[in-house]
Length: 252
Image (cartoon, rainbow, N blue to C red; front, side, top):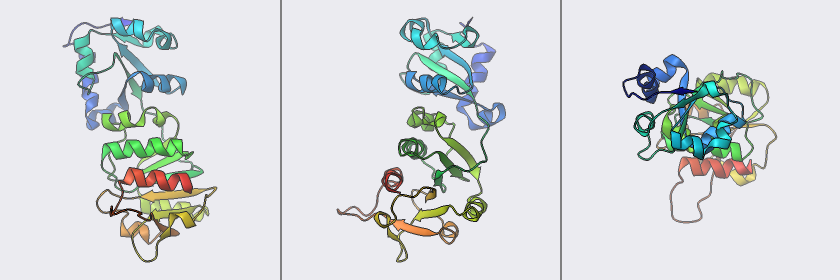
């Protein structure tokens, strides 16, 4: 157990830098916040660097903290915890995580994100993929950084349940997937697309969801096996991409 009292402590300064992608990439570390996310990390045996809490947090999260080695525990005052958190009112516990090595092996059911840029959407889609029984999420080039705080908060621990690949060249990846006879499906609004309800559940599949404004890129659409759309029953012209992904994943 280590206790840090000063805001000018070098470890505090370095840890605060993890709010920036450049430093997360340099150190291969990132921050998660809140009891649920920290508990999921511990239960999933993810690579926890340190857990940071306050004197009050030691009492509040005693049973959770009993599951880790004392040398991974850092006690700080509220002022430091607020510096390390990106929430206006943080919980009394955060964890600094070591990034897991990305597995290059293919999953059975995969969600593929083509330039999805909103952090909340990225986190929600990965969490929904986890809930729908998908075991891998592929983030193409141009997607929001999965390790930033807004994505991590939306994930709520699902980052420790599914395999995640980042910064992937999707054209190359889809061509490799098709060679292994995995069905590739993308959402699209054109005359060649069919209703997602016509597809049925697949034992092995890669579903591509596109950018919030532009949808799936034309280059990707020319590669996939099938294109699907979600019929609108009301007057709305479209759905949020995370909502659309959930509908499709639970059916295919």
